Length: 362
Ligand code: KG4
Ligand code: ZN
Image 1 (tube, rainbow, N blue to C red):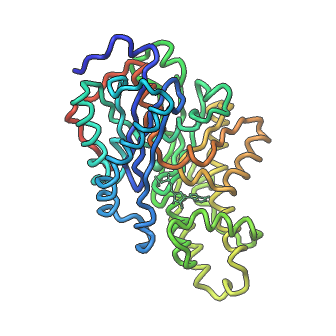
Image 2 (image 1 turned 120 degrees about the horizontal axis):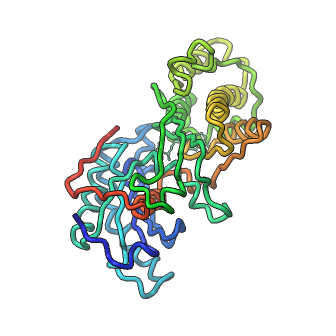
């Protein structure tokens, strides 16, 4: 087991490394605030294939890790000229879920660093990190509350989590860190994935999500697409699970039908986006009511979606529930969200991982 530096528990500086998909991200975080961060993306290299190609993404991480790390050190030395690498108290790296090759590259780098610096390493859950990322927003006066509902929506996930002990775990040195209970998850296509696939049929470049969002803002919903798993008959089994594959197929079938010629691309996108936003909103509000939660926090790349933000805000307000929707830069993949959760694990005195931990795709 690694030895913790004596003073490190007071105001530790923690390094986070993210490499689960197409972003290579690193950041140094202290007291829940970003000191420095650096990011490289291979998104442009995947565009012509219409989706992320794992092998290309893995190679891109290999190529950019050194420069992302060098840039991070340059940036921290602007803020803290006296900074030394040894001042890092703990290192966290995304260990799961993600593309296995991509995760392996980031974890190998992190392990090498942890070994050479003799610092503890944490195998960080990417989804849990997304949930807490909104707390990094300096405009959020009081940070995230102790107990809240997290809706994580990305290209790979649509999940609802009940988060407890977010603050008390640190105050009490709870050896488990914040508690995450998954209420429901992704049964097939995630929200972002459904947008990207429908976008491909519309001839849009990957990732199509932001473009569909923009088109939808210019249109009016007029097609009544299904709202999967919101029927009371699914209450017992899949109350908080999400399935967007059927809705995606309905949208694709519509586009291939004669009816599609009668409506504009904008109106089609508005109808499709409204259906997805509706499903996410309905289930999130059900969960908030059932678990007596007064704050909902959203995260993940798809949480940038305007239709979701608009609908969820309106319905949450009507139930007197607070919605924390962070700026987009905290929604997409980055190193700061990994450092942020790592800091919480470290401060809560959660046991570090052994250097031989294995990364997992799930
Ligand atoms: O979390 P993220 O950056 O990567 C992972 O999937 O982990 O999310 C990317 C996904 C893509 O599917 C993209 O199309 C979608 O988020 N997305 C959006 C918007 N911005 C990003 N989907 C709809 N509306 C948006 N504004
Ligand atoms: Zn992500």
